[in-house]
Amino acid sequence: MRIHASRCHSFAYRTTVAGPCAVALEPSAIGTTRPFFDCLVLSVGVDRGDLDVIRRAAIIVKHIATRTDPGFIVIDGFARWATAGRRGTAGLDVLTGLADALDVLHELSERLEERGELVHQMPFGWNKFRRAHVVDGAWAYRVINVGPHMPPPLPALTRPNRAITPRALPSCGAPAR
Image 1 (cartoon, helix red, strand yellow):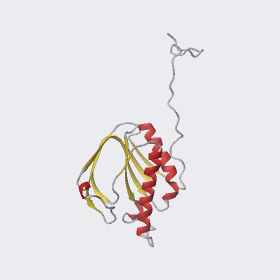
Image 2 (cartoon, one colour):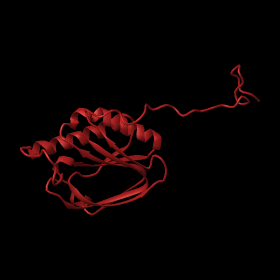
Image 3 (cartoon, rainbow, N blue to C red):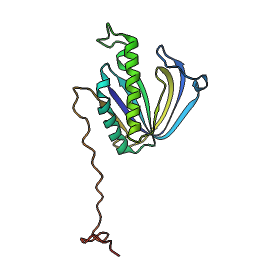
Image 4 (cartoon, one colour):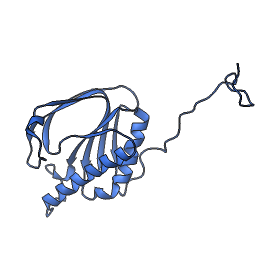
């Protein structure tokens, strides 16, 4: 699994045309712009066998969300093995692979929601017009590879140091006046 994470001031997308493996959508959703503000946008490329790394991916995304404090997490998923020119796709059952990719994306969304995040999953298989205003800074854009053979890409999350000056909290623990 490869995740491209972008922290955005604003992000909007509009579904345009269904691809060959597009999920069903209500006709009113086609061509409608969906705006999001103060969000983390994830482009998630799903590989075969990624059902085994969902827990790890959710922990990593939650870590990024903790660092960036988004109002929403927007997930746009695709099957990486289905892109043109990928090796090792001979003999692959396409329908099983697509079902697995949808399961991975759904499970990732559920795990993030269980951890208290608001998640929106973009329609799978649709061509989209996207517009983003990405923030500046150290956590503005991340690319993460998650796989069974990959080491953890991020350090353990620690709470920010909240130093208190001696005048605010003396050694006895009672607040100073």
